[in-house]
Length: 74
Image (cartoon, rainbow, N blue to C red; front, side, top):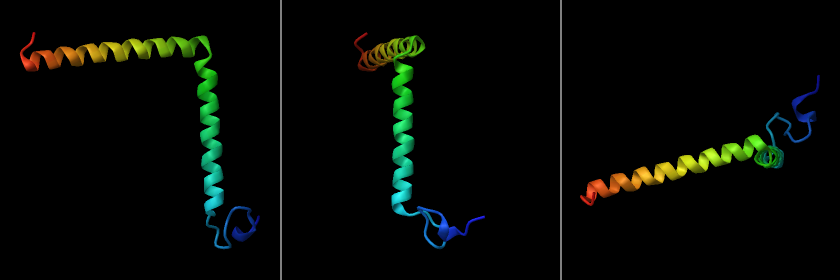
């Protein structure tokens, strides 16, 4: 078993250094971005994107309908 200060990226008290935390966040962010890119290029990813676009369009249409009714236009 290693002592807290022996672990790279940690202080002698076992607290992660700023650099260690930054590198961890960057690594996780890069992994997530790569995963999203792979998923988006798959048939299932494209289908999901189309469903989301349809959903967004329906939401915009409904919002516009509500705005017209509030204004008394329709």
